[in-house]
Structures are given as C-alpha cells and as structure tokens.
Length: 63
Length: 336
Image (cartoon, rainbow over all chains, first blue to last red; front, side):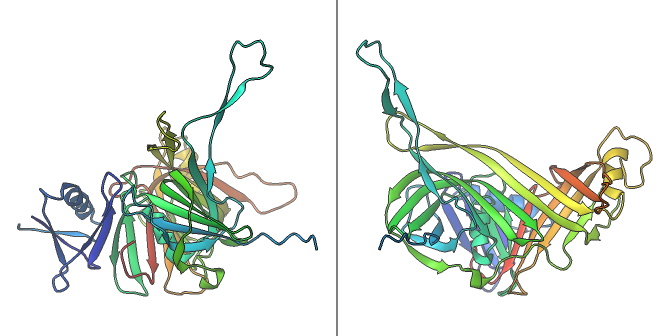
C-alpha cells in the first residue's frame, strides 16, 4: 500500500479509459492509502505528482 | 403580426462524465456564449456515381460517423473554468480552504475524462445533449477590451435531442476573470536571470493548449465510437509595449545582456495572473516554466505610435510537471 498526504484532503483524476476517480484522505491524518495492486493507475499518478517538488501531494514513506 | 423574435438566448451546459457510456442528463454548469459557436452535430456525405446512362447526376450517400463538435467562446467564468480545465488536465489536487481553495490541475497529455455538452435553443425550444466528447483544445485570450476569453474545443461521439437540467447556472452577474491582475505577469527572458521580472507592459496575448481529436469512423453505426487523440500543442503569443530590449536580445543575442549572435536560444518562463471582476479571492494563474522567446524586431512607425514587441513563445518541456500549469483559486470546495 502506498500512502500519500493530500494537503486539501482529496484528489480527483481519470483512468486511461476515461472513467473518473475521486479519493478522500483520512480526515484526521490527511493521508490516503492506495493499494498499488488494485489501483495501479492511481498509484502511478500520485507517485509521479509526489516526485514533483512543486506539486502539493507528498508521498508518505514506510508502507 | 409577423414579428421575428429576438434569438440571442442560447445557453450551453457542460458536464464531466463518470465514464464514456454515461452521458448524464444534468449539466454541472451552464453558461451564456460570447460567440455564435454553439455545440453542433456534424456529418459528411458522398456522391455515388454509377455507370448508368439514365442518371444525369450521382446519388447522395450519407457517410457513417455522425458526431459533434464544440468551439464555444465564453468569458472566463470562475467555477465552470475548473470543469473545462479538468477536461485537459485530468487530475485536480485542491488545497487550502474556501473561498481561497487552490485547485492544482495536472496530467496534461494523459487520458482525459469524457464530457457532455448541452444546448437549448430557447427561441425554438429544442434541447440537445452532446455526449462522450473529448476536449481538443482550450484557448485563453486577453486584451484590454474584454474579459479573459476562453475558447473551448470539444469533439464528441453522440449527438441527440434530449432534455437536460442544470446544477449551477453561471451568468455575467457571477463575474469573470479580467484581463490581468494587478501583479499581472512575471516574465523571465533567460534561465540565468534567476528572478522573474514583474511586467506591467503586457497589452494582450493568447495561450493555446490544443490537442487534436480525430473521430474515427467505423462502418457499423450512425455515430462515431472511437476518438483518436493527437499530440499536445501549446503555444503562447504576447504583445508588449516596449520597455526594455531584454526579450529582443534574448531572442537574437542569446541573453538579455548578449552582444553577439547566439547559436542557441535561451529559455525563460511566463507566469500570468488573472484577477476576478467581483471576487477578490478568485485568481487564475497560467504558469509556463520553460519557453523560448521568439520576438520580432520592434519596428518604429512613421506615425509615432508606441514601440511594440510581439513575441511568439515556443513552449518547452519543463524540469518538472506539465508544460502549461493552470492554477485556479476559487470558492469551489470539492475536487473537480
């Protein structure tokens, strides 16, 4: 499971087939967990954004 | 009495579909248009000619693949702009709290959501739903004479006559993004000049992010079932009142302090901020981290009009993130 800190508590995106997805973080921690096996596209998108220092999403180390 | 009714009542709706197969009947937003370019169905025909001596003309044949397109122009309304941005930058990461919620859009060039557009010929009472479209371009044009103007291009699969409702109707009373905010534009003419310079001499400009969408016809149906996406093509044009030789020297002499012809083009950056006509907390920013400045030599005019600098900027791949980064700060809490 990959963990990401969402500064605004949520993130939305689109799968490669055009279907939309929407994730909300835990209200207390601001962290969302993504199962890389079940949701590889979301995990890939959030990982790429977390690598960009300008983007507000942060990867949370330690699985 | 044979009066013709005024026919300027034309409201268009926009909706982000959850998937391709679900067009929906509720527009997220509706808005009036600046232009006559409403969403419209389109089709092609062929003429079939056969070796029949009795025929003096060919027969008309309707090609497969009726589809729809949109090239609507609107003032840059605040809330609906996020929906349009999402159809080109599909990931929205909001942060901060309303009314200054910052929507950071990303993912330019990846798979976009399908959109539905809706139109109501109020004068003639015909409602149409245009489903399963893909954004083929967004253009932002600003000048001193009008609000920031958005041209929204979509190519879609399925037009139909169907009624719709609207969640949020945007009107001129809601306000719109104005040409430029007070600190309007931060320009950098070469990467080595580390501090972007605030420019107050920008007269107008246009930022276009186009991505061709080709409807692919198949022989088995009346409407298109495949939309082929092309490459992303961002372009920027800026008109500046002459204030310095920086852009000109960077273009031809390789640096703002350059004195000799340069074998290479330096890269700079553009950061444009658009304020809002009625909401001080709404800001729209277009950030382009890496561009090559390609200015025309300024030309003095015999009529003594001001010296102008016209620049076509080549957008380059930045160190991180998208080529063009839209940042929308507004009162919309949920992620688009």
